[in-house]
Length: 165
Length: 438
Image 1 (tube, rainbow over the protein chains, first blue to last red):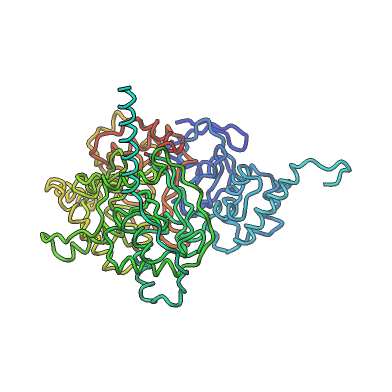
Image 2 (cartoon, rainbow over the protein chains, first blue to last red; image 1 turned 135 degrees about the horizontal axis):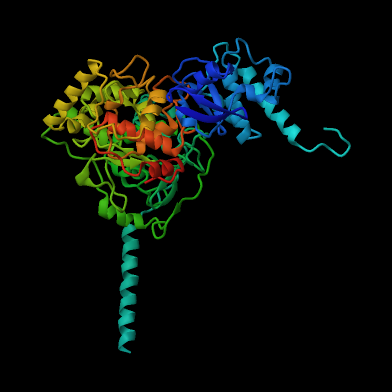
């Protein structure tokens, strides 16, 4: 079965068993290795990507469900040479230790920041609750999301007349 | 002249009738007292009151999501308008800090607030009226030793004429029987103890018994299935849709852990009920389980036989479908989505370690109403904050309404012998939009 959907603004036609999880297609067919396989049960969050604005577990999302839909992975947020604001904030806060959970954390945070430009600490915590981090860098991750929110807000705000931010 | 006289007579009847009703329905205020000093309250009573509050789930209604425990303010939608739960902390101004024991007992047993106002039966005083003096005193001791919180709940928004609280006196006249239930001599003491807990403080029937047009429980349909907060509350009597009839043993395990391998996980408003019951003395939950099981155990011999056969098949790792409907003609989308999204946990055996149940055992998949299955697929099941418990991810972001409908149609055909659900796509859309609150 062939399914057509968009990943990071590029359209793909995937010919595979329709029950194949999106995660396998991303990693095996499209060489997008940001999303990670953790538990395969939707319990750890490391495979999280954004589909039509919603953070979802790609390990439990059969490609058959994706016809015509828009997928964003961590690769869609920026590049190594030119990281996006969310990636920049995670680097600035040194939020990754082993890094296995970080792509999922970032994608959940990305979905949150798309919906709430100024999330409260409570909102950030409850949004990231489905994600496990065994290294224990939670406090840095929370700081990174706050920093990203701040950075993205000031980037969006019009500069003052004299050119100062 | 004659018409004038008739009108005058009618007016007199209305005036006298109204005055009579008001005189009859009027309840006096109870004098304010000084807030009792928490250190003067017997510690054992407080402990016992804590257990009763957990069994009665007081905190669930009387606390908002972000609010302090028992400070009220939670929005309770009813078919007659919106009621906001009151502050039952001992704050002297906004809570019940200046309520005497007598005022509290009257509220619990008669549904009358301290100032004499009739309370709406969203507060289940039709159950609490059965509580013993000791239990009411213990609850009072517990609540009066909570942290006082200054919080005024929003004003209720109830439709006319029910927004006039005195009309509740009429409701009580029709539907409310005050006082303890006499013991049923056809049953032993343990059963009667269970009935006292289940019908009293735990108020199981408030959700699991269907209600009439005026919002009163239908006594002749006791525990035959009702609704709660947009969820279907399944029947607990012989009509229970559970593929394996409940026993006292499985019910006890479920009520304590929020999970039972032959039935699955507590979800929706039942989840916090099990969180409360996990913390109280086991013998209290055992009494409830024994009592409720005495109704579900009335399931027909055929159903028991079917259940035994089902368990046998699942234990033999049978991979065939359980449903009677042919899958040949059904939409393949459902089967594909199930294979990709559900099968890794909901394996074929009764319960894989750490996984979900085989859906042939699921009450939601076998229920007459699709609502709970839709809600669980959309929102998942989540343990209490900071505690371990059953967990399932939600698929609201992953699947469209059509896809959820296809998935549920497939599950129903494959895992249940019950007839297909009607109008699934529309039902999914309404549940997702929060428009399926009935």
